[in-house]
Length: 202
Image 1 (cartoon, helix red, strand yellow):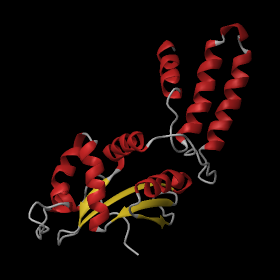
Image 2 (cartoon, helix red, strand yellow; image 1 turned 90 degrees about the vertical axis):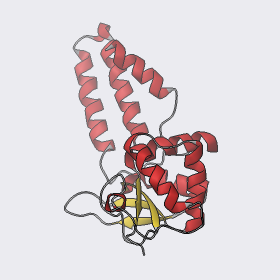
Image 3 (cartoon, helix red, strand yellow; image 1 turned 45 degrees about the vertical axis):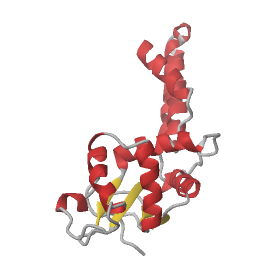
Image 4 (tube, rainbow, N blue to C red; image 1 turned 30 degrees about the vertical axis):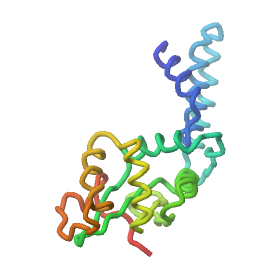
């Protein structure tokens, strides 16, 4: 439990974006309650209440905007790099036209809206619910001038891991050194980092 307490303090020092901020607040309350050993069995009643709050907060029908925080553009760029490392789709069409997609569940649309508005690129597309999951929102960037703006951001704070390796190749599609896009693209980059080809353009 000391490790959980230290993690709760660390995460709470830097506000999260999206519904995870609410999850963290409730979880932090549970960690605090656990450490209040003088309350004895009374803590279990509090744990049950917090568990109900967490389940209710995670309901897709609950859309809460946690993006109203004071965050600088450089700091938001770092957030985007980390977010893209885990969730981004750096892909391309078979003819070599690059595309960038980030998806979140629809109740976290505010996060994508913040990114699209702050960096002034792309558009948001609603993805209806399906048998595979809840409704989503996709941040889609396909215009070359906007993709080049993203490249500038990611060159300053690049994604890590597999996304970083894919980005190195995708970068060449978005900003080719000779001004011409590659016309033949390996199939593996069609799928980007998350699989599939992202939402259909509208």
